Length: 102
Picture 1 (tube, rainbow, N blue to C red):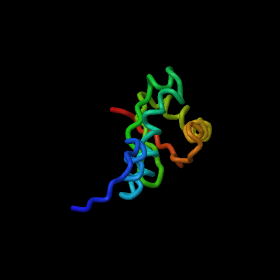
Picture 2 (cartoon, rainbow, N blue to C red):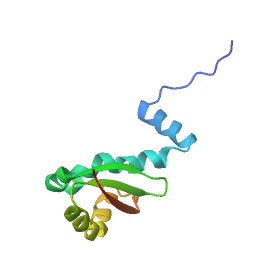
Picture 3 (cartoon, rainbow, N blue to C red):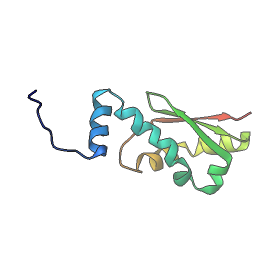
């Protein structure tokens, strides 16, 4: 048995390589928008919204509690996109679609 010995690598490096090889790295980056949402929008908007999913084309779906919030946030979409995409400098989200939560 002549196994090639490899040096140990940090788990973050191994996971990053795995995700890239599987073509999942972009999707993971997009999903980070969901966890960043409350911090990016602040407590008042976070209390009235819930980020649901990000599509492969970069559309973030967000549930909102009222029509008023849906209207207000739709008007704020360009500002919200800038804020979400400057968290780590990568443009992960291209559009935000607000849906009334039932």
